[in-house]
Image (cartoon, rainbow, N blue to C red; front, side):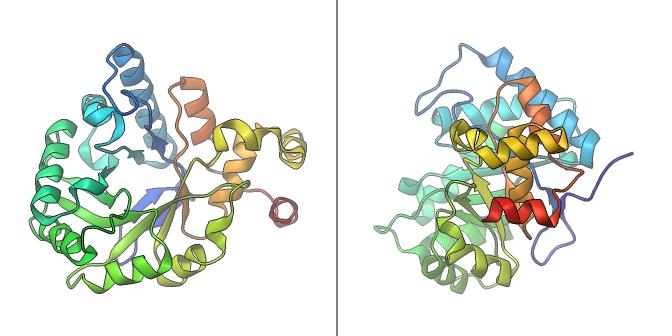
Length: 279
């Protein structure tokens, strides 16, 4: 039976996304393409898509035109074969140097080609660019939305003031996601941006949620893993997704780790144990 308890609602929509997605940074290369592990990466992505669909009826993949200079998007596109497009929620991101109107539209068209799809579910501004007016960027985003090339608009690494400004330039839709660095070890987003987003119904998508393994060595995380019969990664991720409108996108190219991440869904730490981690 599919467990849908970990599907998070998208603002102003009937749609939902899984609380655990798959990040793809360094899958396909860092800032240049790496083709040496394509078959391994495609296998891992296909496994994760299938397992997430089995678990909650939907898969979430996060990529970017920056990753592997577009090769990450190409691998995601190849991994979609054999699945219904409606079962996979694709997030990709536009580079800060492409935030002017014409460049952004062209960048989106490039991402669509590499992903081998007719639409992007969620299109994010990867990083702000102070040299390009955010009004121009949002005008291009709304064009893509109106043309049906993207279904939702999001941002990444925006503080409260910039997020408010970006939202003010949208007339027919709104920003539904802000992707930020957030983990047990980095809780700076809790000061201002997370309360604002939760108040406004905007999903927080947490990247680097395991701090490249550092959170797995925390004493209380290890103790709770033993108590629940879970792994330290599952404890740290469950703490994140227990929060309203928070989604985590851990990256892995290993089948066992992908399964471990996705199996973070479907259960919850007790309020008492959440408080232990919170403190």
